[in-house]
Image 1: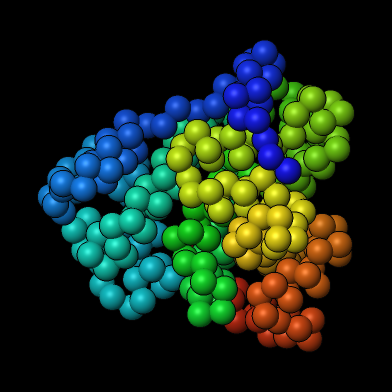
Image 2: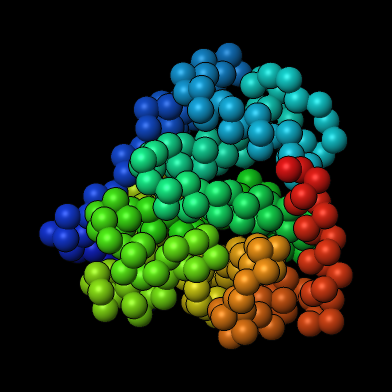
Length: 281
């Protein structure tokens, strides 16, 4: 189950696949937090360097999963209300889309719209189930944004990636066996390496690597619950867009059980979560 990261990175390099570098705002924020010698003003100064990240933070922090009804008007308030470590996770999520984009290609727009919707749904589910699952909204949002990040990495390397795998819309997503056969690599492994490269928590990295599998808890520990949250959010995304979800037929019952639901509860829970999702816009 272990990946030799050095060998895996070397293979990607030989294939011409480049992992995205962390943006300066994220590097400086991580350095400041690691020093343990900072105050709110210093954190605000670092984060404020990137207007795109700031805009994303306000959008996320004002959503019900994070604000819990409290009015947010400044970065200082976000740090105090959401929490410093939690904000650092949200900065990672916000920075990723800016690092992996090609504004001239419609496929990237489709990908990030999908990723943000699934991440929002995941954060709402996590907030609702935190007492049962012990996964927090910012962790679920981070995993939701990063869980398919191997896709845009491969899109940037292989111009015909979407065409080859028939990814013509946001509801049709790659089959791992097809990826391996056509490109010699799959987006889950690439996404895992991106997450490690960006310093995400180990259990989030493992969830990204195994998000199509829902492995046994003894194999990956706490990340199995995070995989279940991602998969339930993805399933609700598919239902919202009225398209089939073949993976759910294989792992759906295990996902529900991991999150403490029976099959008969899914319909009511879907309706309740999607109302919250649509309300936060």
